[in-house]
Length: 277
Image (cartoon, rainbow, N blue to C red; front, side, top):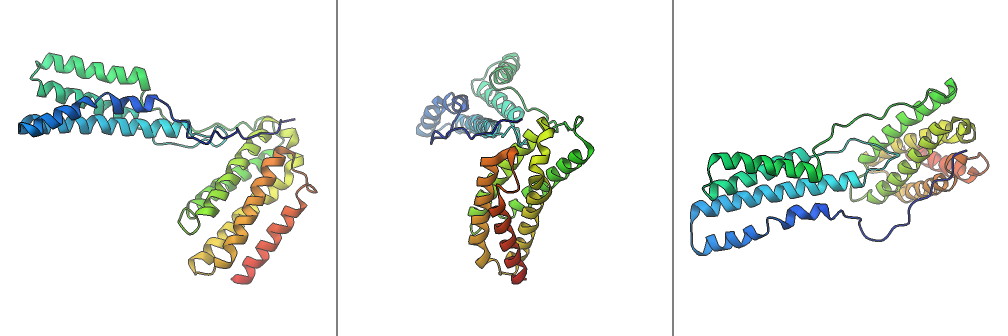
């Protein structure tokens, strides 16, 4: 039977990789060069120094954001991320070539230094990786369970798409609650795929709750478009919070009687939404 998943304890601070700062530090001396070029105006050197700095810090920004995306990737919720490391490596090489031009070095040295910069970046950070869609792992599941799991995954993807419409200032709290629900749902799905014999104990999760959340979100967004969702916003936020709590505590051991209260909350919210139409 799958073991209950527990969130890692938060440390209160973002877990940043020191490698992401390196490309910000290395070109820093060029700022001194830029200031000197401003004091004793040399337009050629000034423009080349500024161009080199732009290349290096563009590479630093692209690398940093990619590393953070990779670091924050949720194993149970794989998704395609924007990997800009190859572009960043090209920016580093271009910055080095500009420095070689500014220093009036021979073309052969340009090629050697540009290639060395690209290889050095590759050895330290790697290059962009092609996204591979996760493969289905349903081979050992009974047909009924397999179909239920596939349908639940499709509903989750639909919920994610609906959730992106909540990423607005007025619905930000709902968006945050929904993100937690989705994350817990993917954890449960992963556990069920690994131990399909427990799917029967989570049948309401597979057959009812995910689909009900999707339907309620669809109805809420329709009302929101007509300015009728204000009364429901707080109730929906509370319900999503309760859903997230129930999923987190129970995971793959969801029993009908364990979350009977959740049944009632979803039913009441559903009825209220129908009355608002």
